[in-house]
Length: 404
Image 1: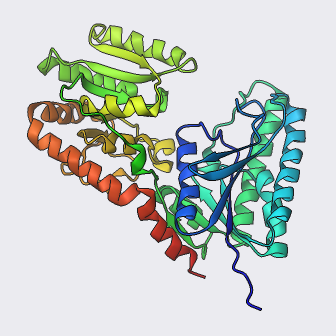
Image 2 (image 1 turned 90 degrees about the vertical axis):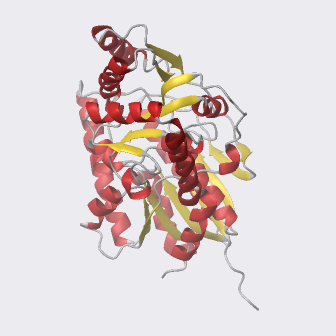
Image 3 (image 1 turned 30 degrees about the vertical axis):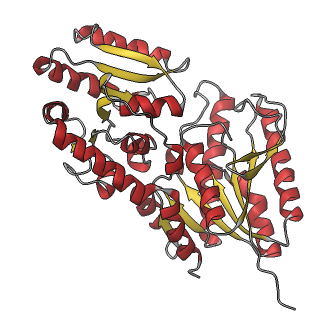
C-alpha cells in the first residue's frame, strides 16, 4: 500500500491576527504561499496575554485558510503570563497530535524558544520539518519592560537567555531558515554554517490593491506609516524645509497618528514650529489599507526617510510595497536592502541617509519632471509585482523546500 504524502502545514505565530497590520500581513502571506503550492494550511495563533483584542475568538478563516486560536483571559501580570505560556504549549501539543499523520511542515514566525519547544520535541516523533522565519534581529529586540525594577531586569535576562537557546536549537536541528534581510543572514551565518536559508524581504497579494481612478493630485509630499523616532521623520522635516525654500506652495502630509504616537507627534510639532513650517505640515490619523491605497495614488511624491540604524538594516520596510503599488514616484533613503531590489533613478529615487540636501533635490526633481517621475513610479510598481508578489515567491519557496 502506497504511503500517503503528508500535506498539512502549520503557520505558527504569537502576533495579532487576523486583523493586525505590518508584520502580521507578512505572516499571512506565508500561509497563502503554502496554500498556492498545494499544501493544506492552518494558522495557529496563541496570543500573548494583554496584546490582543480578539482573545475570545476560537476559529475563523482568512483568505480561505483556517486559523485556530489558543485562548486565555488577557493579563499583564507576570505570573499569569508564565502560566499562559504553559497553556500555549498544551494548545500546540494538542494540535500536533491531532494532525500528526498529515503534518508536513511547521513555519515558526515571531515565536520564542518557549513557543518553539514543543514543536522541536515532537519533530523526531512525528517526522515533520520546521522552518524558522527570522524577521527581526533577535539580539536587538526591544524589551517591553522599562529597566526600573528588579522584576523587569530579571525578565530581560530571561528573554536574552531564551534567545540564545532558540538560536542553538535552530543550529542543532539544522532548521531551514527564512531571513528577511541580508544583514540577518550574515549575522546568523557567522555561527550557523550549513543551515539552508532563503531571503524573503516582504510579500503581498496584488489582488488586494484595488484603486479608484483619481485624476487630481490632492497631496504634494506624503508619508504614511508608523510614527516613531527611528523612522527618520525629523530628517524628513529638515529636508522639507529645503524643498519649501524653492517650492513655497508645496505641503507635506503625514499619515499615521495613533494614541500611542501622540507624544512623539507633539515632539515633531515643536520641531515644525522651530522650522517655521506650521502652515505647511499636516497630520492625519492612521487609516485602513483600502483608504490608504487611494491616498497614496493621489499624491505627487511619496517619501520613505529611514535612518541608518540597526533596526532598519535588520528589517525591510513593509510599507514600501504599498508605496510602489500606488504607481507614484518614491523618494527613499538607501538603508538596508532596498537598493538590492530597486534601481536608483529608474524604479525609485534613492539618497544616502542623513543627506537632507540630496533628499530635498530628489523631491524637487519629481515635482519639476512629472513625466519622467511618473515613469519611475510605473517601473517601481512593475518591479514590486515581479519581486514581492507572493505567487512569484511561491515558486522559489517550492524549489527551496525540495533541497535536502
